[in-house]
Every structure is written in C-alpha cells, then in structure tokens.
Length: 443
Ligand SMILES: Cc1ncc(COP(=O)(O)O)c(C=O)c1O
Image 1 (cartoon, rainbow, N blue to C red):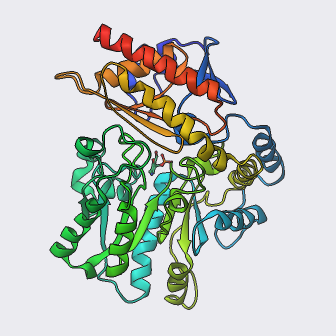
Image 2: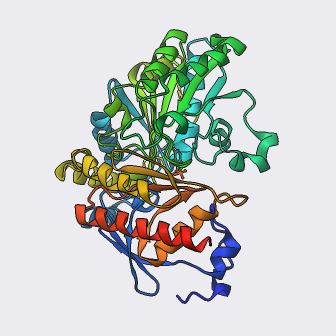
C-alpha cells in the first residue's frame, strides 16, 4: 500500500486528528519483538507496547501458533448456552493470577466492554440482595474507562463527554483526581502525599447517602490522562471507605494488569483487593481483542442466589470468550509465566526509574514520575497552545525511530516488559535529545 492520502479517506480513524494524519500518515506494516517497521522500511522502537497492550513483545511465535491452530480447529463457538474448553481453561488460569477471592471471570471483547460489564454487575449485585436503591456510580476526575456510555459517564475526561453530555448515565459523581504536582513532583515510585484525596468520597456520601451508592470505579494508576499515580495509602483508604459503607470497589486494570507495574495486577502490588477488576489489552498481548472482569466470589454468589433459576445475568457479547482470543490468552499467560515477565518488570523498575529521571534536566520538563515499567514525563505547556509541545515531541520521536505516547503535554512511556537496558538507554537518550530540539524550535 502506498501512502497516497486518497487511499486513506474511507477509514474514520479512532482518537485521531483524521485530516492531519491523512496529510502526513504514519503507517506501520510489521512488528517483531521491541520494534515496529514502517511502510517506508524504518525501524521504530516501541516505547508504549502498542497501546499499553503488547507486554510480551510483538509477534511472539507461541501466540501466533495458538491463534492459527484455533482458527483451523474452532473458528467460532457461541458463548450463550454453549461453551468451549479453552474459555473455561483461561478463566481458571486467570483466577489463579487474580488477587484474594476474585475467582470468577466474565469475558468481554475490550476494555470498554469490561467497564460496562463491571458497572452492570455492581448494579445487579445490589439488586439481587434487595438493595436496589444503590444505583449511584462514582468515578474520578481525569479517569479513563473507555468509550461506552457507562465508561464515559464514570470517566472524567471532558473532551470524551462534551458531544454526548445530554445522554450520559444520570446518577454519577466524580471524586477528585490524585495529581498533585506542588507536593509530589519528581517523585520516585508511588508519590508520598495525597492518601487523603480518597476522603473526597465522603463528600459524595454526605451529599447522597451511602445507601444510594453502588460502586466506585478507579484506575489504580490513570494512564490515559497522563500517568497519574496513586499516592501511598490512597487505594487502601478508598478500600476502607467502601467497606465501611457497603460500596463495591472496582479497579479498572485495563492497562495496569499483566505485569505493567511489577505484579500480575496493581491490586496485587499494592495489596488491596477490590470487588471487581476490569482488564483487556495485555490479556492476549494485544494480538486478538479480548477483555474480562474478575469478580469476587461473594459478588458472583449473590447474583446467583438472587436468581434461583434461569439466566442469572442478562448480559453478554457475541465474542465473549472467543476461541481465537482464548487461545491467544492462554499462550500469552504461558509466556508471562515461563519468562517471568511480571517479575522482570519489577526487577527492571529501578534501572528504568533512574533512566527516566535523567530527563528531569531536559528543557520544558516539569515532572517525571514512574511506577513499574511506566513513566510519565510532564512538559510545560506552551503559552496559549497547550498540547502542541507534546504533539511535536511525539512526531519528532517517531521520525527519530521511537514510539512514545502523549496526552496533552504529558508523555507516557510503557514499553514491552521484554525491553533490554540498552533499549531503555536508547529510548531515554533519543527522547532527551528530541525535547531539546522541541524546546529550541518552538514548533
Ligand atoms: C483504564 C482503561 N479502561 C478502559 C479502556 C478502554 O479499553 P478499550 O480501548 O479496549 O475499549 C482503556 C484503554 O486505554 C483504559 O486505559
């Protein structure tokens, strides 16, 4: 395929400035290990694991083979009133990784579907227990929970809601976000200040009454809005408040799951067990779309008991537990285990931390923060032109053979967990040079 813009017109691209992209496209045609290959044959070091999903590196043979074998043997199987072994096996394997008594798994096709599923399970749980006045959902400012109506309602990103504001879910509140540059800038690992931000939930409780609140949903670490970390003790405090008031706690681990922060899930790493965990992305190493919701035994049991016969939960997707996705998931979990990639992320984290904090002295950098194999590098917005410095950095890095991700003026780095130290040095080295170029050019 050439890059002539007329050939690019038909696809309405997601979360993309379509007109700008089609004037100057960036097309990827191949991937292997840590690298993409562009349509013009350039190698690009993947500093973002695609979109936070390719945790085991690209085009891993066992995953490719598992998908191909499944496509030949069982291309599709209905998941309603029928099943197939790989989906059950995957649920069992996943329940071993999930923290605490989260051992029931509902399959979806994406992170957005996982979020909507989790919100619906929360409502169904209270309903099944005869607590049907608990309908209110609480999200967090600057949260990202995908693009379904449920997800954008509990999400806290104004741009994602503006055009649809008239039709969002009605009973939703948002607690404050956890970003506090004044006290926590250049923190290493989880920031020390801000556990008390969790207490903002008490404001919502005071306003509406705890008995109206079904669930609180937060990302343990907000990735899409610029790597906003949970202060030390914050998630514990949220858990305590939810316990005290009978509110379910949902961790959206679509990006923090599968080793990203140095353990199976962020919940395992911080030692806080939520009632539900949403996941996707790294579940199949990004190779086949798949998501899931991990559910605590007691929540599942309550929904079962609330419906003594027939279908217990009127919810599901044509592609829930899809055979190809299940095969990819099993092969992915095998790689994570056999190569010890979650542990690798944890053991590489100190090297990663030192490397990314070297960017502190690069021009325009106002914060560097990190957790596991994630880093956020926040840049000073240009006067009157927020986001342009970040976008320039993205484009120039891509031209220099480095893939980064930007949200406004914050750079997010989240490489595949197989990254080598020399590649960390390359990533950070090029990024530092680019930030200097960007500062000089003003472009
Ligand atoms: C925390 C979180 N939740 C949900 C989603 C949505 O996932 P998907 O794009 O697979 O629908 C994302 C995607 O980045 C995410 O980061």
